[in-house]
Length: 220
Image (cartoon, rainbow, N blue to C red; front, top):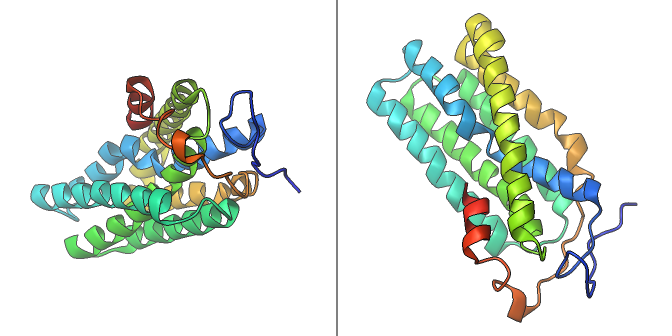
């Protein structure tokens, strides 16, 4: 049984004391939620090139997903408790995998908008898995920097792989299916995330997070 993030009085954490592996797992889960930001030029570009959408429809698909990411992140971070985070991570990964499968088989702009909106909600929730743990750190700027690094490297590696090897052979559908496979593979990581995040003290709830450095790191 992995130790859950209980309360502590010192060190690098306001509350809780997750291990380095647990922190890395949470950052990876959040990074999976943001993979699409680096893959949109490849995957949405392929949809346009293959004639699945017009230029205007492509913009609507991308915008719908970005709005849904914001909504999903807010719902998980503010409306749901920071409990059972492993199950929440697993459910969100499965939901995102299903949305990517739907995207791969969608016919028409409306179906694509629906699929990517669903994907965005799941992606936003995955981002909150990481940011909620970062918010409990006394070093939010530093860990936020790690988060940006992990997601950027993952986006670059996957974008290169899809552009060179997957999309030329299997098209946009193959690219979205590959993204779904990444989500399913990440289920193994979901069970390493701390199961429960300790509650933030009310006086500390935003004091450590809303600094210029931490905001820039989390929103990069």
